[in-house]
Amino acid sequence: MINSEKAKALSDIVSRARNGCDGHIRHALNRGFVYTSGVDEFAKAGECHWLIDLLAFEPAKIFATEWDFGRCGHGMIHVGVRNGFARIELTLEDGAPPAWRYTTHTTLPDGSWEFMLARDGLLDPGRNVTVLLLPAEY
Image (tube, rainbow, N blue to C red; front, side, top):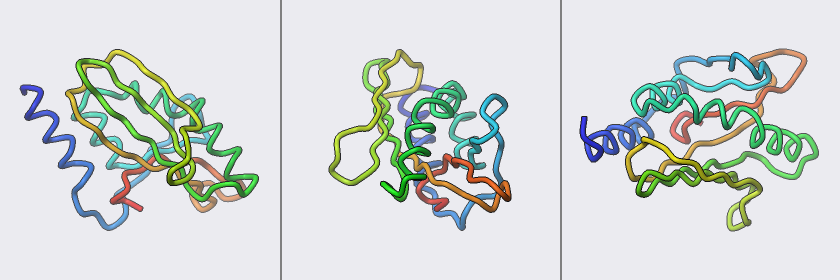
């Protein structure tokens, strides 16, 4: 698949109308972090499970701390790729500067995609977990 076809396929996954998600996958190394079936579909199509691993740690912890202290409702992850470099940012409020930023080399095609971070107390009763999801799954 050439990069423009791959970029379109990834954009289609992110923008597809959904009625919530089909399931949740618990991260193997951060048990307080889960991601949805739509995010898993994106990672498989983009061959970028590394992105989930990256988001499961530092940005997830920053978001969880801010949420636990009542300073934000949800977080937005912005992934922008250009010429083989990905710029990944976590924002906690509209118009606010990023709370976290990371740049890395990637094989993802040029494009931009958004994901959400939310907290959920129903998936793991007795504690809140951080959930990475597509905005259409919210």
